[in-house]
Length: 246
Image 1 (cartoon, helix red, strand yellow):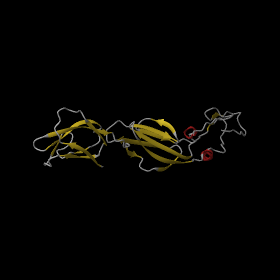
Image 2 (cartoon, helix red, strand yellow):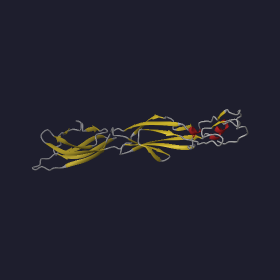
Image 3 (tube, helix red, strand yellow):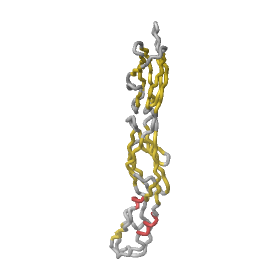
């Protein structure tokens, strides 16, 4: 953004010095152009001189990182006499939010099954090269302060969830949001894998094969005559019909 500063220098001869300093304020990235106006009673041609950080034309293209106070001088001369004006230029920090560079996942609406995992990873930067701090939220609850986060969908996660990343540099912040749709797994179908009837001869070992229920977040147990591991060593007195549950 171009910013123009206009002030007046009066070219006169004074018998004493006056400490007068003008203060001008701009923002980082502003283009500054000073346009002093001086008056010479004799209408002589005037020449202006500028000091750092201004160019010889009285301009300065500020950038990020230039925030601070700069004292400079503008001088006007008609070839015989000169007059100088002290100027303080204050450059205010520009608080642009940090930029979030998303590495994964790229999709913002994701569908997964129960028991799945999603890895989130991001990096951030700002134009001042400040440190960027991360906060990850799951359904509004803070869950991590790292630059990465892994979402685990268990067997009670069916439904819609949101993951939010907030990146801040202590001055401004940016955010990204992902929507996760978790599809329910019908664990009841695991029971269909259990044998309904087992027939053996006396003295044979019965061993019931079952799915890995714990993998699906389920607990299980066996009832008599099976032991805790689903086994029964029959003998010659074991003939008969037995009903058991697991």
